[in-house]
Amino acid sequence: MWPDRRLCDVLGIEHPIIQAPMAGSATPTLAAAVSNAGGLGSLGCAEMAADALLTHVGELRALTNRPFNLNFFAHPAPRPDPVRFARTREAVLPWYRRFGLAEPASAASPHGPGFDATRLKLLLELKPKVVSFHFGVPDRASLAALKTAGIALMSTATTVAEAKALAAAEIDVIIAQGWEAGGHRGSHEPRVPSDGVGTFALVPQIADAVRLPVVAAGGIGNGRGIAAAFALGACGVQIGTGFLSCPEAGTDATRRAMLRNAAETDTMMTDAFSGRAARAMRSDYAREMERAGLDLPDFPSMYDLSEPLLGAVDSRAASFLLYGQAARFNRELPAPELVACYVEEAAAVFARLKT
Ligand SMILES: Cc1cc2nc3c(=O)[nH]c(=O)nc-3n(C[C@H](O)[C@H](O)[C@H](O)COP(=O)(O)O)c2cc1C
Image (cartoon, rainbow, N blue to C red; front, side, top):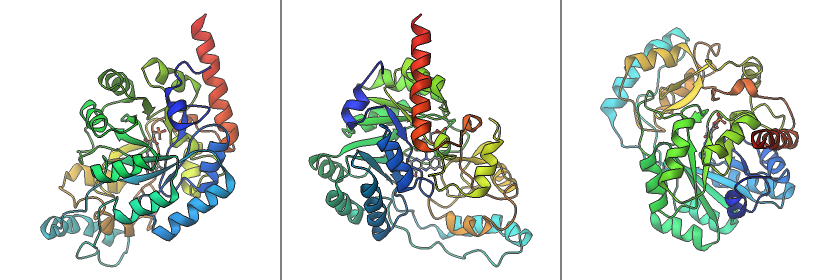
């Protein structure tokens, strides 16, 4: 039924529906359920330590023998900048006082790059069918080693220039992530939160610019969105927010409640939590920090200052609840049923458009 099977062929899957790798929210149970339903399940391995990664992949492999995707952040190590850290500390201090918290950290904790030799070695041992990256790609030698091991590589582009850079790095699949998307924007360089291109404008321009399979991500929540992605030139979709309401997801109770009554205006783009732009539910803290327009510590050092604020008070005051602009379409269905709904709805739209 799919009008373009390139993604299915490259990834070895039945339906061109990728469950987005959502660090902290995508569990092995969710990923396995999606893969078993014919889509591509993904695990967000961003901050995962090696032993946790091994445990998660073991759990996943016990539940499915279908292809799955392991996802990593490809950001460089944050540059130490005590002056910027101290200035930002001054800005968050009133929030600590307001929430009755102890003093903020006075210096950034040590952080390495998002992808390193340890992760590469693990992947070459684990040999998942697919590996994807966010925030660019690691060095050429790492990419070549992964490709030689027979692993299909995907990475995110938020502009045409980023898509061209991924094509030049010989990535196999490009995920065109629009402004509507929940979670971190995969921009290769940090950008101000107000700087973004929507899915409807981005996907066809990337599809015209590169010869690779393009996957549309951002604001897709039902069969109409999936069919539209194909009309725009994509040969698959990556959906994150839509899977957050599945019982298999690791979504916390607060966010599940928010998603039950979600509206298209719930969220905003903010870098006030991690130092990189991400779409999350609006909160007083995020709004005021965006208004202040500070030059924040590099990702992920900003977490050293923001993390104590989360959960200190109610989520309207400060929270980092990541979800996208199409959350209204969320359904509380087991993941296999949700995938089946997406397939059935998309088929109905394709059939209707043919007449
Ligand atoms: C809760 C959440 C966490 C996310 N974490 C990651 C991640 O770890 N790695 C990644 O590549 N993308 C991540 N994303 C972005 C998704 O890959 C994808 O671009 C986005 O979910 C698509 O838009 P949608 O949420 O409207 O479906 C995350 C998205 C959400 C909602």
